[in-house]
Amino acid sequence: MQAKRCVRRFLLAIVYACTCLCLFSGGSSALATPEAVASFYSGKTIRMLISGPPGSGYDIYARLLSRHMGKHIPGNPTFVPENMTAAGGLVLLNTAYNTGPFDGTLMFTLHFNLPLYQAIGGVGVRFDIARMSGIGRLLASNAATGLYSQSASGVTNVSEAKFRKTVIGSAGATSNSTLFPLVMNRILGTQIKVVSGYDGETAIFLAMERGEVDGFGAYSYLTFKSVHPEYLTQKLVLPLVQWGAVREREWRDVPTAVEAAESPRDKQAMGLISAGSDIGFSYFVGPGVPQERIDALRQAFQLVLKDREFLAEVEQAKLSLRPMSGDDIQALVRSVLTAPKDVVERVIDVTKLEN
Image (tube, rainbow, N blue to C red):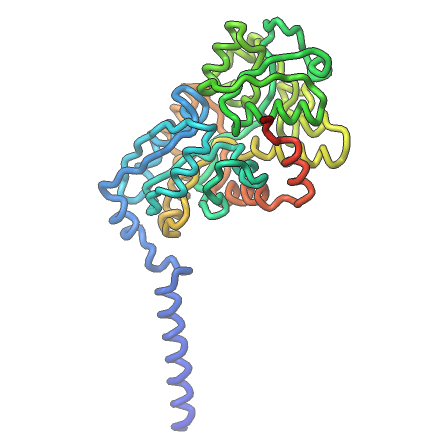
């Protein structure tokens, strides 16, 4: 009997020790109470770095989120948006990754071309997106490479762009407004000249209307619909190809880049390049942020999507939403970073910048 009691006490001691270990381990949320998160965020400011210029889709959606997210985070921190547009979001991501802070007081837009840019070993990459944590996505849709309907080029579709020269405005060497036309030239045989140096889409569209360029390298369908609906309703843009897995309904006559490619390998490459369209307007935090704060930010993001004031502002501004959770957007980004080697090599080949 004494032996049985000793064994019972020994087993209870093990259970107690395991329970304590679980409570105090990093894998448990027992210590990650709302009170602890609230204590940290109370009186704090969260900087929201935005990779697009004022008035761009990146800017409009990030500021919209910033106006509503703080009230759903324990401690109710204040959001302060800040535009950091250089090099198509590259400078922003390098800054966020290397200088922080890494405590959950810095969020940022992930420019949707940068996961692919990292995967192909792009110049100037000083970050690893695999170590960053996704908070959520507000919007994603197919992007288009297209022309202004009144441009002097006379080109109306991708087939004609193979035989007539067109000039397209770009926001920078690492942006999709440069990479998409470059890929089209090398895989589809189009004759597109890219003029870089424009400060975002708004500047490109103004140049397009002035006749300086014939069109744009990358702009998403739902951003057109939300920010520049007149381009769609007045048929001022002529998409040559759209970058995404499935055609947008209103662009049902425009081929996807995958459809426009001919060989199986080129179709795979186009598919990897098009993955950025699904990343869309997504929001991340840098490496090292405590898990309980990541969880709190993700939960707050989901609550924003049900917030009546947020939804009323979305409706009043005639914006669109295609949300995705933080876990899912993070998984999507990692799928780009772990793409098959032979496909990545083909993408590297067709995205090399000219000297």
